[in-house]
Amino acid sequence: PALSVVMVGDSFTFGEGVKNNEAYPFHVERLLQEKGIDAIVYNAGVAGYGADQEFVYIKDYIIPLHRPAMIVWNFNINDVVDSNEACLFRKNISNSYTQLPAWRNTLFLSGFIIKHSPEWLRQTALFDLALRLPSIVTRKERYTLGCTLPEGTAHDKLTSSLLDKLRYFLSQAQLLARKNNLQIVTTLVPFQLYYDSAISNQDVGDYHKLRSVLNNSGL
Image (tube, rainbow, N blue to C red; front, side, top):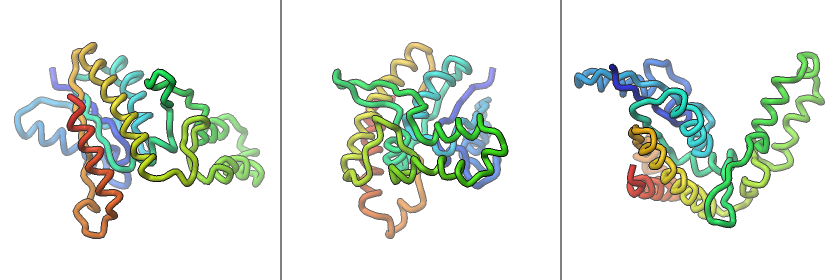
């Protein structure tokens, strides 16, 4: 049978703004087949996802429902912000992490309200204001109650929070890989700005910190 590979990540993996045959997973499949490897590569990238959503996606859906031979988990420096604003895991008193329900996130709530509201209500100005109210109050497009660090939190603290959480995700991913007899590979998706002299020192620092964590993850 063909090697089944699932690629997980955000819009960089999904291929936001490009055709399906221009997205990263499509080219990986083509390169594998050119090397004589019979492989099917599935694009499981979701625009807007952060590391928290991707970890849940892997453990609750991809592994139990699809059981691929390999998962390629792609990261990007966007995850520093995304993992805060779309936070689903909070550190607990035992220094581990507790998963929070999705309804605590304002974006999830907005989607739920839109889905279950009648068309006439969705056309009103009051409805639009109600959807935007959480963003107005929190000053963030996404915010998870009891998890997202507040506006004005130092960037170093955001980065440290993500890296600690990422180490937890990767250790759990190792256990899942052994238990289910599959391989999980992590990558740090390159981005053009990294090679541009105009990139900020902050982004370069985040890139190298993420790379260090991934290189030492054992995956």
